[in-house]
Image 1 (tube, helix red, strand yellow):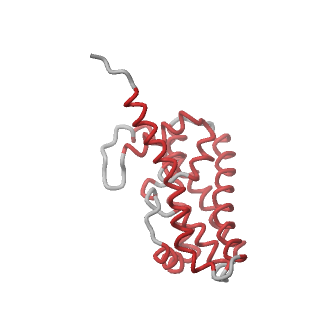
Image 2: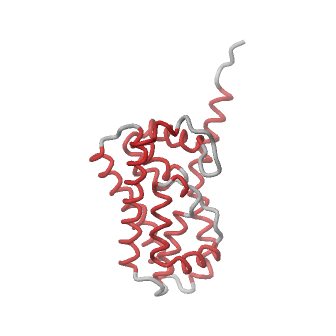
Image 3: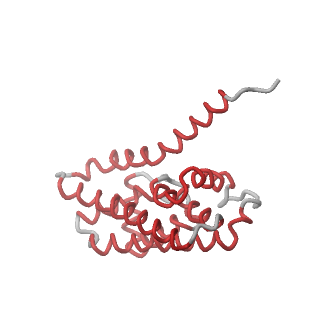
Amino acid sequence: MEIFSGENLVALIKAAGLLGLFAIVFAESGLLIGFFLPGDSLLFTAGFLASQGYFDIVVLVLLVFIAAVSGDSVGYAFGKKVGKKLFNKEDSFFFKKANLLKAEAFYKKYGVKTIVLARFIPIVRTFAPIVAGAGDMHYKTFVSYNVIGGFLWTFGMTLGGYFLGSIIPDVDKYLLPIILLIIFFSVLPPIVEFIKEKQKKKQAPTIS
């Protein structure tokens, strides 16, 4: 979930460094505690900082790609082992059953494509590999979609920030509104889905 402002995000990335970025992407990709981390805007901003010479772009994209794919793989293994038990688990500070159910509904709707599509949807991307493991998705199928989704997400977001930072003069002046726009489009799909569900409930016939 995107909860960091532009200035805070830049400070976070500079303080974390490459290893910190690896850990953040890894956690958000498949660990229950990573659902609140700033995935899309983090990758974009890291790419922007690479365009300013703060990171080597080749090292950066390869590192976050490996983090995303390995994070999802850990999430899948976790879901395979204890995923079904999570549906009976009580809510806690780090775990909300509603998030798991949201990912499950997404998985039922889109099937194996969920592993790719969920990369671009906050919260769902954290729980999707867990649901895939709990749902006994074939591992070879999961790995294929995991690699494709991880590549599109990490390379797309990071290189987007890098090239924008390279071609627009003084792009740092526009960094905050750009990040806000990314955050807006990141949270838009869940909002649209929520509105659709509300409309369905209103339109559903009532039994008197």
